[in-house]
Image (cartoon, rainbow, N blue to C red; front, top):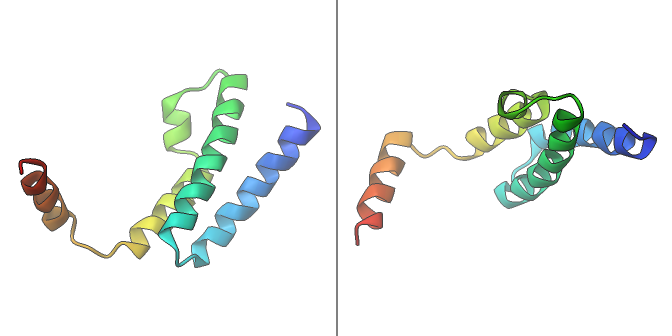
Length: 87
């Protein structure tokens, strides 16, 4: 991994920590999308795959904050999407 990639990944870890005080879901999604690109590069270099991505600490922190921000009930949300998908 190049020094530039290492620095970008370091910044992604910092951003994951900062994500824990985020209040804007859209901003989190965009930031996570960028981090995911970096994590996939890291995973590919290490011969890792989906499980590595799904359990990466950066991903975990972002997903945790997204879950915190979205207080809607999962079952109710699932039913609403199911009903609306059939319209």
